[in-house]
Length: 352
Image (tube, rainbow, N blue to C red; front, side):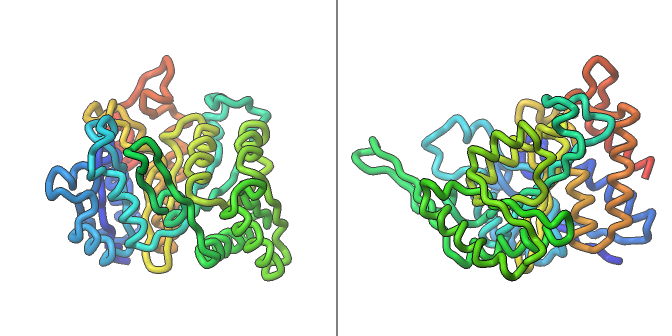
């Protein structure tokens, strides 16, 4: 099979971790007889520096033409530290999601047998954790009207959702739940927010279409607490943009490191795969960043974009093997040898 993949390395450690995902993907393709055509394109601060736009039209054309997009990270301190900056790298990420119609962010959280004692939570609380968040990506407060008034003394960010936006995300959640444990949790703040009440009533109306799925409704603050207390009680969770952004970062550390968790962003026509971590500018260029989240995102890509489940499993298997053998970067090495980012990628590719 010929796989046409757009490659958006982005900023910070993005290029370094993307390089390792390419190594591993190429090794898998060679093993299983596939041909990958990679098409690089600019995004984020790198694109602002080059053309003044964090998501250029040319990059969009590359993404639309590809079968899938593999993405690194966006963000740079020179923009983070300048509240007056009119153009920001993160604007490119939001524009990319909107233009590609990537309305559902799929973020799994699971544990690795060899790392279970590295989690900040006790073993008995996290054993068996295997949950998936579906976060709505193109609506809510991040895309609502925002601004200042009263001479800049008052700021506002409006959160807006339509029933159609909620329904298409919930449909993905119900469908995913049917392939797993048939449990779905709708996360909202319906006791306070009108948008949350729309979410809840929309999902309630859909229950009859999926009678086998056990649906629960929980407030976002309660879920934040229960993710720490007993995360293995959850299976599939659906929620809006802001809540999902916060909760998935919280859930990511259950595994022991944010550098381990992959994600996918899906729409009607396009699919994008990325690690959940940011650009980590403090580590950029030092060859120390953990590439496993990006490599596992590539595994999700083989599975979800191309239906190549054996290829995806080959990547997951070799990642587990590297963790068990201690072929890890400094965030996981503790007092043992820490491998460089590129060395981890080399080891994984060689052992595919």
